[in-house]
Length: 140
Image (cartoon, rainbow, N blue to C red; front, top):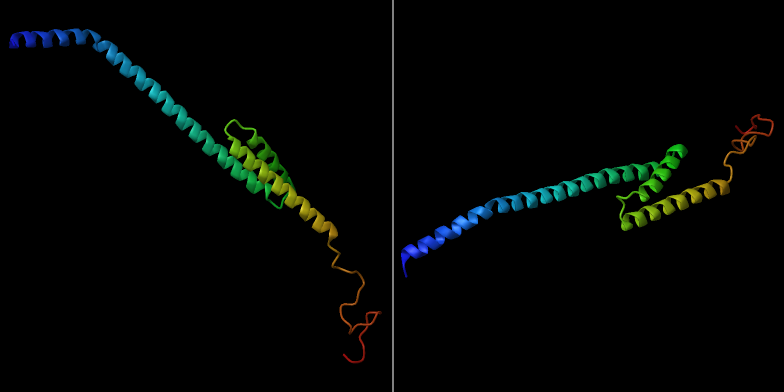
């Protein structure tokens, strides 16, 4: 085996590879670019979903409010959040279940309010020590 022949072969191989090196560099740049775009897209989606979830939390808090206007706004926001492209199928099912539970709770509260008797009776004596005319009895 001739060392000069091996050296010539290595030199010729490296010379041939050097003509392909710009293509390798271009390939590395293209791969890096698409990886970067994918990473940016993934980060943007994660940031958007985080902001979406913050809005959902606000809507749930508003829907559970004692203030009727805020509650109505919260329910409308929950419906809008369900239709968002950021909501997964599981998110949509969860929001639908929450909205139904809130509506059911609200209806139960309204029914309870309608069924509860008035606790204040007008013109009733405060104690048995008073007469119907509002005067005091002798044993006071």
